[in-house]
Length: 376
Image 1 (cartoon, rainbow, N blue to C red):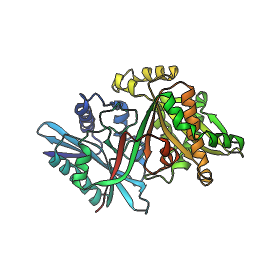
Image 2 (image 1 turned 180 degrees about the vertical axis):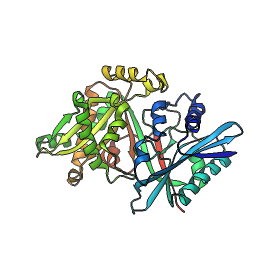
Image 3 (image 1 turned 90 degrees about the vertical axis):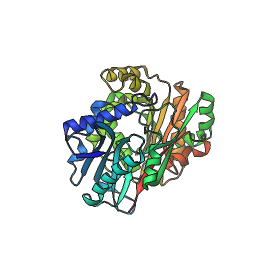
Image 4 (image 1 turned 90 degrees about the horizontal axis):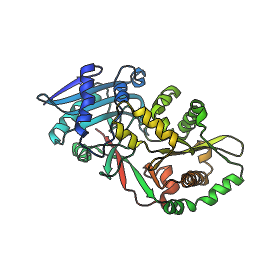
C-alpha cells in the first residue's frame, strides 16, 4: 500500500473526492455531498487556509491502482481544549474495511500532526472545525438520514477505537412521529412560555424577505450562545453567510424565532428547518439541486422537520431554566400548528442545554454520534 501526501493538487483532489462517491454509491442511506461545495473546501480559496497559523495535509491511500482510503489532518490555530491545550484534528476519513490500512493511514496523519504541527491532543473526525462536519455515527445505522447528519460506514468506530481513540463527547438524535406525540412532549412547558409572554418577552419569526440582515442577527446571537461549546472557534459573518448558502432553502420562517426580553434585548433563538434529504438524494449533489431546493422552500412542505438549534445569551442563561423550556415549547407549537407530523430533534449533546431542556420528556434516542480523542 502507498500513501500520497498533498495540500493543493488538482488531480489528487479529484481522486480524493471521487473515492467518497465510489465507496458509497450503492448505499441507499447515503446523502451525497454537494460536489461543488466539497471541491471548494479543498481549494486554496477556502477561508480555513487563509487564517494565519492554520496548516493541513491530505493523505490518499492506494493498493496498486485502486484507491482504498483517504484522510486529512488539520492544525486550526483557534482550536483549543477546555484547558487551553492546542488540538489537532483529522477529517474526511473514508476507507475500505481493513484494520491494517486504517492503522497505517491514521499513523501517517497523526505523525504529521505531532511532528510538523507539534500537536499532542487530536480529535476526530472533524473537517477543519465544528462548522464544517464532524463526529462519527456510532449507533442508529440503517435509518432514513437527514441533511447535516454525520454519515459513515458502520465499521469506522471500531477502526478508530482499535487505534486508541476514545470517546470525547456523544450526541443523540430523537425522532418523534404523530401530532399527539408532539403535543404530549411539549405540553408541560406551556406554562413557562406563558410566563415569559406575561413578563414582556417577544418571540419574533425569522423574516426571510430580509434574509441577509436576519442572518447577521442569527450569527451574532449564535456566536454569543455557543462560545463555551466544545470545539467552538470563531467564524466571520462572511463565512457564516457562505455556510448557509445551501441551508437557506431549509429555513421556514414560522419555525425559526428570535426572542427579545422585557427590555427589548436579544436574548436567544430557536431554529427548526425543513429536511432537505429527499431533494439531496434525488439530485445526488449534481446540477438541478438548486431548483429542487427552491421548490421545496416555496412549498414549505416536506416529510419531516429538523429541530437543530436553540440558544440563549450568557446573560439570559444566568436567569434559569424557564427560557429554554419556553423556547422548546414555542417551536414545537409552531411545528404542530403548521401541520407537520414528524420531528427529528437532531444532534443533541449529551448533558448539553438542549438535553437538559427537553430530555425528561423525550423518547429514548434512536441514533448516537461520537467525537473521538487521542492523547499521547
